[in-house]
Image 1 (tube, one colour):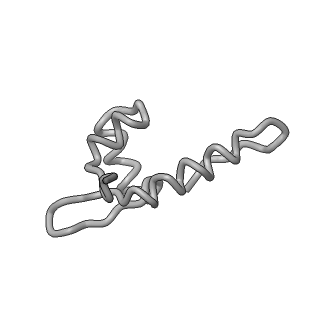
Image 2: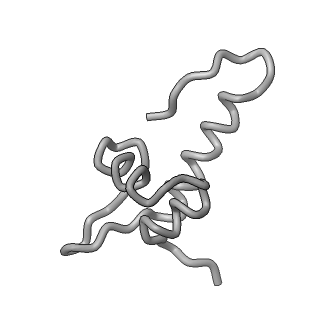
Length: 68
């Protein structure tokens, strides 16, 4: 069974970015997240959708743009 949510530090490792960069991206809304009490979690499906959009934007011949 796949995990349904990830912690911010797990997503930082997956994306090969620093932990503080990941928290900044969550705060800016660049990484979709859900706050449950004091915890911040990233839904697996939302992360997969974000990466799919980013992958589609990096195809040859397409204008690259920042994913928000």
